[in-house]
Image (cartoon, rainbow, N blue to C red):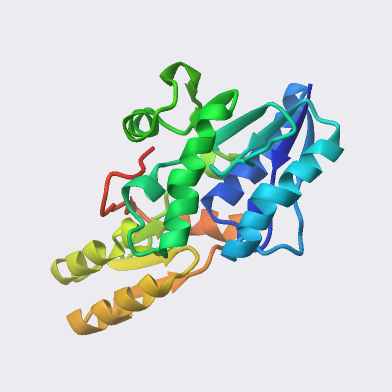
Length: 255
């Protein structure tokens, strides 16, 4: 079988979905699947208009030209008119449960519009039973068409040996946005005078709010923000951090 995979999220700064796709591209061929990656390097996936252009125009055209038997949409959104049988991975239902800070047009497109498209796909892949249950609660998709496939662990992380620094560090990974609730961790630092916080992920305006909060609470020198690192640097950071912080403002996603 030849599978066309939507790899647009690997363009530019890859967040969690981009890393997920990179993992699929590296490992699925080992199972005998003939895989073709679909991406447009000049199309910025983080601009809303470019994202819609990719999802609804460029992706279906690329899928048709690929000669594949199946299209795997990896980031939730799917073409309204897919030329191939389609499978979609839904990582969470944040656009249906949270993201109230986002523009109305983005909430509509990634929320109601996209979720309506899920009813037409051949199968839906989710990362966890929690996401499956949330998906069933928030949409009208057929539960029988949902498969829970837990993300794998890259070899670079599977063999990590913890070597904590003398000063404990909390590690928070992911886009710095309101639903990740980094603010609650910053407030906790007031009661944890010997602990630092490192947030690794693409910034949003919420990061500025968190930095201002840290300054008001007098813990700014113990809070550091960084964009996504190379796997080797990130692995080193994982070894040094004894604790991983995963606060959430809502129950929009979980693994």
